[in-house]
Amino acid sequence: MLLRLRSTLAALALSLLAVAPAAAQDRIAEDALRGHLDALGGIATENGGNRAAGTPGETRTGDYAAERLAEAGWTITRTDVPFPYWAEGSATVGTYRHGRDFLTMHYSAAGDVTARVQPIFGGGCTRRDFRRFRRGRIALVAAEDCTFRRSATLAQRAGARAVIVADFTDGPPTAGTLVRPGVRVPVVSIRLPIARRMARSRPRIRVRVAPIAERRVTQNVIAELPGTEPGRIVMAGGHMDSIPRGMGINDNGSGVVALIEMGRRLAARPRGRATVRLAFWAAHENGMYGSLAYVRALAPAERRRIGVYLNMDMIGSINGVPEIYATRRRIRRAIARHLRGAGRTSTEGGSDHTPFMQARIPIGGIYTGSLEPKFPRQRRRWGGRSGQERDACYHQPCDDLDNINLPMLALAATAGADALADLGR
Image (cartoon, rainbow, N blue to C red; front, side, top):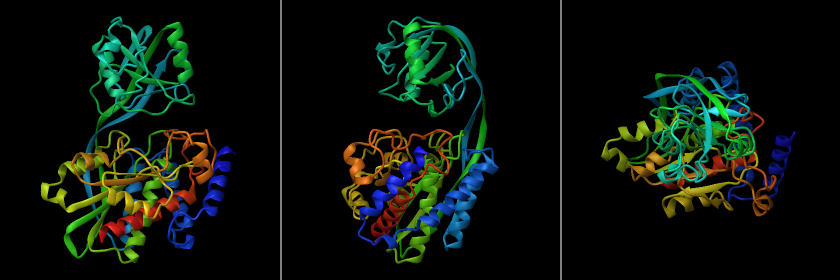
């Protein structure tokens, strides 16, 4: 009920606010985007309820995108992405409920530990935070100012037999990742209210983790339209996998369907002289393995050909606020020209623009939000509900077909397509 109310409010606000120079009827059609989202939902339903990395759901997502773009005239290639597959198996944290109260961190080690919990009041991001930690205990950390992996590694070095990470929301725990294997102790995340009680009572509890871990190979899907200047490439991309616990409709089905419709729009209109590439990245949720593998495989001369990479990740948040990030002013301006009123956000953070940025390839992107709150001034501009998360279903099973803001998704997809066309000129 609340999700539908949010969607209705956002739709009303967007209908009242003309934010792009093109007329509303010139936007990518919401019906087309909805049709693709329904197809992704069907793929998830037929494959265990998800489209997770290394599973048939992810493979079928890539097939669907490839088929739609091939129909529009794009040339399709696929590149192998070996990665360490990891799936949450059975797990125990005291008497708490798995999935509702706690989750295992991606790439947690297996283990069965019973020990007393000791809170790390400094947050758990520096060695100094652990100076009074007693070896053999279970570390309770916040990891507010560092990656989960860093905090878990510091706890392990301090002698922790297991690590509990306090989730940063009051709702169900989110699916976090340690990015890659290597941490040798069990690591779980737990709801913030429970973590607070643990910090006060310091209970002796059992933490048992028994994940499934093996090597697998998945594939990136790359689509290309040749331009008249072979020395210039403009790119856009987004990851196609979901977390294992849900359909991943906003994260990142929104990016997948936007890229499909961007491709159809670019193929049907004059788009400039540069070659255009669209990328559907595999194994993002496990640690951005698809985009990392792609960038690492580029020869130096090929890297220099790429004038820009635009990232499309979470662009249909139900209570969203459109924001732009970019490393060059010309890229920011190209997007803002078609997405007027959008805010700015940092280029920092874990999405698939990061490997390109690290390779000194200019990047930009659109993002509408996850667990960030919406402020009153943003509500006045974009509708929705102030004080609420932009996507309360981020990394939750409820990121389903009801968890999408179609007007905002259509706006972002249109801006992405037209900005890429401008940059290609």
